[in-house]
Each structure stands twice: as C-alpha cells, then as structure tokens.
Image 1 (cartoon, rainbow, N blue to C red):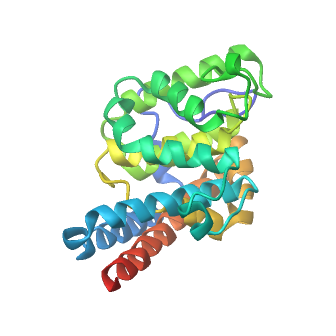
Image 2 (cartoon, rainbow, N blue to C red):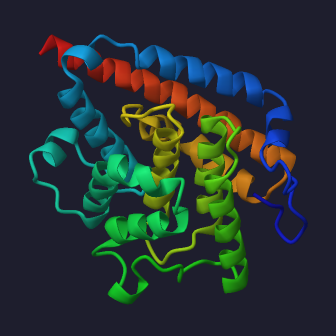
Amino acid sequence: MRQTGSVPLVTEADPLAPLLDLEGVSDALAEARAAVDDALRHRALRRQGGPLAAETALRAAQASAALEGHDYPADEIRGGAVTDPVVQGALRVTEAAPRLADSWGRAPSQVLARLHVLAARGLASDPDLGRPSGSHLPASEVSARLDGLARLVAGSADAPALLLAAVVHGELLAVRPFAAANGVVARAAARLTLIDRGLDPRALIVVEAGHLERQPEYTGAAGACATGTPDGLRSWLKHYAAAVVIGAGETVSIADRVLAG
C-alpha cells in the first residue's frame, strides 16, 4: 500500500514488516491467529467436514453480498430462491476459492481477473469482465498498484498470512480497479490468501461475517487505509484482525449447529 500522491509507506526490500511495528497490530494479529487455530480444532471438522465447509461458504457469500447492500436470509439463498446477481457472484467466488487458491501465489493477476469474471457476471458488460476498467484512479496508477500487489502475493514469503490478507483486501478496496463487484473481489482475494498461506486451508473461517458485524468500522477503516497513512493502516489492520476473531467465532457456531444435526 502507498500514500496517495506520495512515496510508498514501506520499502521494496521488506514491504510488509514495518506494518507489524504499528501500535497494537502485532498483538491484534496474534489474537486473531489464536482464534483461527482454536476454531480449526473443532471436532466437527473430523466428523462433518463436508457439511461444515458448505455452510461456512454459504455464510461467507451471504455476508459478502450483504456488505454490498444485498442482504438476504441464508435459508432463501440455500434454497435457490435468490437470483440477485451480487449474491450469485459472491456464491461463485466463494465456491471457487479452494480451486483458485492453488494458483493464487503463482499467478495472482490471472486469478484476480478470474475472480472478477465470476463475481461481476450480470453486473458488468462482457468487455469489462476480468479487466481493470472502472477505477477512480488514473489507469497508469491502477496498473502500477495491481502489479505491486501481485508481487506481494507472489513474494512476501515470511509475512504472516493475516497481514498479507489484510493488505490484499485493503489495497483492492482502495484501488477499486473494476467496473463492478470490487468489494466481493477484494474479500475473495483475502480469502484466497488465507487458504494459500495455510492459515485456513479449507476456507472455513467466515471473516466476511466479522466485517458485516462491524460494518461501519469496516467502511471507515477501509477509507482510512486508502489514505496510506500509518494511522489509517493501523486502523484497517486492527479492524481486519477483529473481523477474523468474529469470523472464527461464527465458524465455531456453525460447527456446533452442524454437530447438533
């Protein structure tokens, strides 16, 4: 991420490490990591892994669409009664995430384009699907920032998964490169990062539900992050960590219900 109209906040040599020095960030990420680890030890993973994965994916898609203002009850979505293209796009990217994660670290630009094709079908014109074409920023800046983000995803081998996922998510919200479905794509890309980096290999943590539960903070922190200032970045990273904790709790609640039958 970078400051608007200024120089990059972090260096090319070690682009994410300085973010861990922002006040409260390391502790917040550690708490979030512990919550994820606890959730993934739930006994439902051994007994009902398939139904649990299906239900957490549904809940993630529902929450992602709701963050775009398209909120429907889970039962209606589960029953196939919701044809809203935003919801359908969120369902497609969530369902595809485990498959796309295999390529995310190697070819992030291509996977990002594929995410947009899945998310924006019925929302953007065919020529705009998978192509950066709708950003509020100059095309040259969009291209440079997406290239930089791709380098981060393909590199940053030592960066904590949660930190990288938060940066991916925040940068895509800031750049908004596509004509439609930028929020759904940003949340899906963050999900891919957690899968690819091994923190949540089965895509069971419903981080999207955490963002939805704290939606005003989500919106405000994303806007602060887009400024590229240390305070803005700290606000976003701490929000992201808090959303992960809530999302892990949502996963545990779903697992409990799955076990109960």
